[in-house]
Length: 249
Image 1 (cartoon, rainbow, N blue to C red):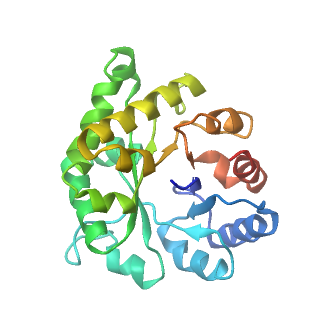
Image 2: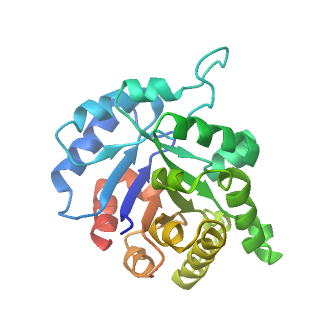
Image 3: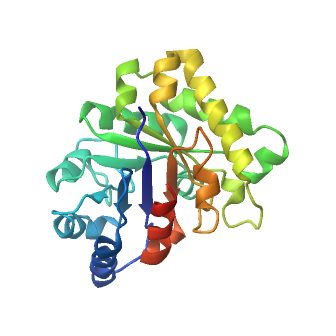
């Protein structure tokens, strides 16, 4: 059975003291749930988060990493650096990494390979932009992103892959993605994986939704059969909002 996951991507937010305060509040208010709860603070606060949550079921993930083991990559973080502080889950391919920092499918494929070689779990993000949705190219774009970055993997590697579909057009644009649109795409994602790897892999991979999940829409989105949770942005920065979203799973 595939996992249920609610993951909070904190992006470039929260100082050290703010991180400690939010983690303490989340730990105190965390609802009883069988779903995995993950937070992804900024790099400089990762070690603090791991230590703070040492006795908690809340897990810590990194927001990114480089594909190289080490070397002249100023400002980058390697897999071993993350593993060295107790982190074995990393978010790769986020829409902001793609649009703002030019990360391509080929570049992300190398990162995925490094994560797999290091036995890390990847939360792999993908999804279409507004103009691609308007041009009715959303299925083709998602299929291409999946195939280019992930379909070289052996079937066994998918045990370490979590997918996070981000309809970029529904994040901060004023447009709204309906729960039905989320389900439609998640079903298409499983169909695409099924055609390559078979039903077992397709039905067991966790697929998260990352399109502006809020306390007031989480329950309806999470009720869809192919939606296994969410990758939460802004709402994960407020303990009460994040807790309500966790309750919805």
